[in-house]
Length: 213
Image 1 (spheres, rainbow, N blue to C red):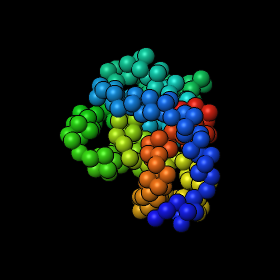
Image 2: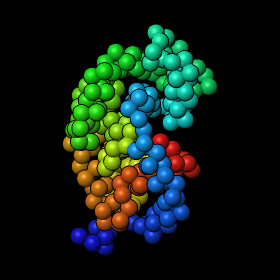
Image 3: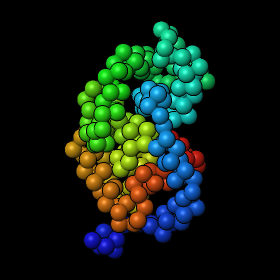
């Protein structure tokens, strides 16, 4: 079906923004693809911290956890997440989630490296890692090099509505609704000739001014 029949909006401006940022976006995606398994723990931890907190604060908090070698030491993650310079909302709950991931990490890493497809891994993560919903699991997998999974946060949904991919912003995202919007996002990407992963970073840079992870 043609773009005209689908009645997408503001495609010319979107293409222009992508063309301006193409090299930086593709380099960022290449960076994700080179992440080594030994770095997966902190990438997963980052995606557990981002809900209801800024990406910048989550990134700073992860650096603080790394500096104290949280993965190998028995330290109070909640105290680190509570620090003013990178405050993470619901720090006690999220610290508990980090501790649970650390305790189950051998099983998680085995699953991540067993050759399962990206969609299969996402379903497994949502079922087995507390604190990871569809968005967070998709985000984590993208950050370790998996492709073609939609990260449907408010920035992405806002842009999908702007381009008339979806009619309205969903009030909630059930699994069924998430997959329905992801399917529309994939078709949109196919129709305009820009991959969904590239569009994700275009939309994020539109909102933040930076190509963040």
